[in-house]
Every structure is written in structure tokens, then in C-alpha cells.
Image (cartoon, rainbow, N blue to C red; front, side, top):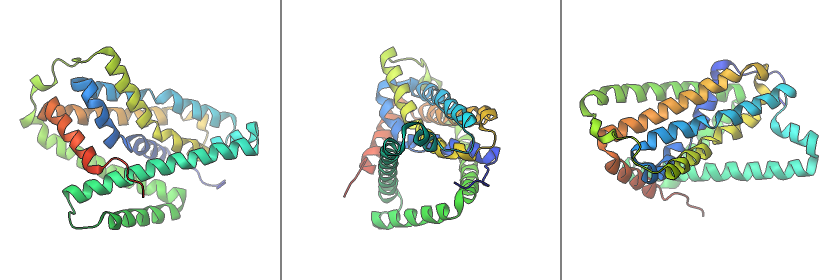
Length: 262
């Protein structure tokens, strides 16, 4: 345990923001067919549903400050059950990392670097990840803060320039052209995708000063993610129409081959 490491408000906000955004760039495409024009509303609601779970983790951090969720589990359940849960946690994170790494590198190969082997891109990204992590938690948090800021600037500049001239109101109205059951399924699917940030929060809760007083940090972070990501989907639908947006979304996922193992 790095007792002297304490994360700042901005670092916590950006880390949870990027953790929630994570694989949603790919996984949200699976709800488009069910939710249609309401995809952006389902995304917004689904991300917000993560907040109660994140607040609960901070509540645990308030009761046992300076300890990760796994430290708390070891104290309550014993070493062997906790070791089993830690193994499950590691396997789950490795699975997510493998899926995202394969999807991202296959998309790069399909659309940008056509003649570069996928394994070369993977090796480069793993090498960069090792460098970031080797810099310690504070260094990793600062890097995430910087990259997220640059990414958001690029996002807003791109959409602000594109939005006024290409938006078609008829593409986004009526909003709810789906069934309630499909809408709920889509929202819950996005909750599961955004819940990836909870895996990270289980660890960094030990490094949040006075975790019981920092609930708003989490609310602001996850709420901002909900606004940014749902607005991106809204703009895409408004510019292309729901049918074309769905075809592009599924084409991207198919190009990424979802998950490759071997």
C-alpha cells in the first residue's frame, strides 16, 4: 500500500471519467438496433445508474480509510475467499483489456494503418501502458488527466464545427420509437459497460483523501461522462440518421472482430 499517495479531485474525476467511457465506444453499438433513435437517452440513463454503486464504494472507503475493497474483503472473508475474488478480478480485467486491445488495433488496421501488422500495434500499446503504469499511480493519474483533456478538446472542436450545418431534426424525432423493454435492456447493457470504472474505483478508493466526503467527485465524473457520450450519439444520429448510424456502428465492430484469442 502506498500510504503517502493521495489523488487530487481532478485526478479522481478524470480517472473515473475515462474508466466509465472505456469500452463503451465499442459496446454501445450493440444497443443501437434495439433502442434506435432513443439510443442516446438509453446511454445517458444507463451511465447514471452506475452512480449509486460508485457512491457505495466510497461509503466503504469512509468506513475503512486507506484500504482497497480487496483489503476490506480479506479482513471480512479471510485470505482464501479474498484470493479467489482477486483472481476473478484479474481475469475479468485481462478479458476486458484483451477485447479492447484487439478491437482497437483491428480498427486501426482496417481504416488507418492498413499495412502495419496488428501485433505491432498491440505491442506498441502494451509497451506504452507499461511505461505509464511504471510511473506510479500519481504519474498514471496525471497522464490520464492530460490525455482526457486533449481528447475532450478534440471532441468538442470536431462536433461544434460539424453540428450546425448537418443536423436534421427529422432524424431524431420522435425520440422514443422503441418498446419500453428494449429501452430498459439497452440502458442496463450500457450500465454494465460503464461499470468498468467500478473495477478501477475498488483500488483507488484507498488513495482518495476523506473518501466519505468526496461523493460529488464521483457524481460529477460519471455525470459528465453521461452527458458527453450521450450527446455524441445524439449528434451522430442527427447528422446521419439512425439507420446509417447503426450500419456504421456494426460495421466498425465487425471490422474489429470483437474478441480474438490466440
